[in-house]
Length: 319
Image 1: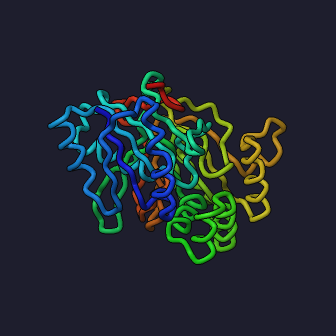
Image 2: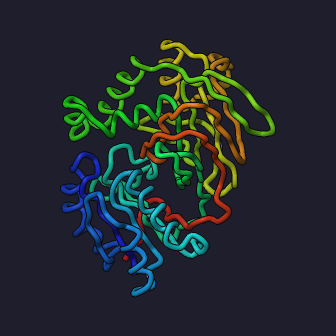
């Protein structure tokens, strides 16, 4: 059995209308007879998953929502059956805002789908360990990317919203992302951290740092780094010692998929590496973002979980 978890609150509530229009069309796809569970956070997803596995032997789980909904599903599934995660398949229906997990898009009724079980492949699972604001040691898992600095702060602002942003999110997603980026940039201050990776230790003033398994990070922004979903590596990309003009130029380059420039222009402020692990040393709590979800954290370290999960291919299968 296939289980679909529909987050009706995704994309500032727009997800509900999109789902109602899409659901009848799923009857002509491989999702023709799923178990559908709709919810609005907070929701005990882990208990629901555990019951589905026990009673129905469900092994295919689909998140209908945004990147955060997919991350919610991934972490709940791992919490239920961490040691056997390789026997499950996860996919998504893009009802969110940025929908990075679904890029490049394959649409059904203007909604991106990634539910092709026939084209599923093993996928590395990123893991971040940290201390939360309550002083508790925790870990979270991700399929897309994670960040600190500008992107994490922008995701926090995007999730919190304001009057202008909430209007834009419902009607003009790219404008909402650009509005948030500019608003965050105006108040941005770099943070001094120590990085440990590839047997090196470096103290740097970070504007933004992204750890990626998916080079798409938000809206039209993309790292031109050849990271593969199953290569057992993490992509580390960061901006350091940059002023506002530098950052605007980098943002423009990322829209053209050239964070790493072949002509070398502007590369003094940019770093791009492949790593197996990364440690971030910073004495204060900072925003940590994983797949669009943001928390306060310190003592942050990244690696890959020892097991992989199957992830659906882009698009869908015929019935």
